[in-house]
Image (cartoon, rainbow, N blue to C red; front, side, top):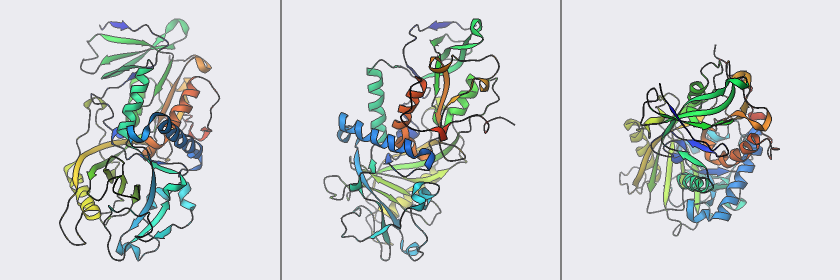
Length: 417
């Protein structure tokens, strides 16, 4: 029988992270593209709040220098064959179901417009359309790994306790108070939870924000619940590249987000960053198995990386059309798993006590509760800061500064059959 080491500090915020490497999935391998007004109605207020929080944080903490915050010009690149079909656009995938769906037709740019990226290979008959002008202040770019490291440093500096690597094992309830949630039992990831000494964290309010693993964590902590948190994973391969045609000091047109299509059937997306890197991604799959969170960084699939490298060479390489020369340097390759819901918007909600399973209750109102924040899809970094604000307000029982009623989860869609 295991014994618990009780950490008696009930006013402290505790972060429990099982992965041996921090930010080894979507938070560290994301594109870092930010938008203010590209979202569906239920997310639009949260999107605007989060975008302004990104701007404020960067202004107050030197975000340009610390995590590459910069305005960004967004364009859709249409290859020569597709340019003959006026209905096909490089950003079709992100227009579906968002405020971009009914946006006015994009403006076709020429190479002298001052808004086209010099690092993008051009071909006769292609077309570049302006989606969002960086001077409008509604789109921006960051390096998400650097931002996440900054945020964690700030949290720890303010007294947040990080348990890493550690795994949540079970919740603890107070039988004298009708099974009221009173703690969270964790074990260091290197130890076998069935026999090792565990730690008990006092806990009346529990937030589950485990990305694509959120459903697994909920099932482990509340095994008697019939509720299924409907968050699945969307796997995405990506590369970080260096090109001699992109550097913030050499490229007068600044950072760009480029959306296009490829003849292999996927939609590449490219984001130039202030540090001289270009993020290249867009090869996604919902069929790849979700690895164990405690296993750390996922190993990319060689065949998918090969396909991504070929596309990057064709779109960003130095050679003219049909040539093989390539002067791109691969800085990093990776595979991450983004959390998605079937209806396309995230869950930011308190879970009802009756959905926690037999014998588990929580304190009323701001004194307790179990909360879930997950399912942000490709917009996790863009919506992350705003989500943090409203989630903190929700947990503390304060008035919410953004209407997220459309993101509540009442459990009706999440019961096991």
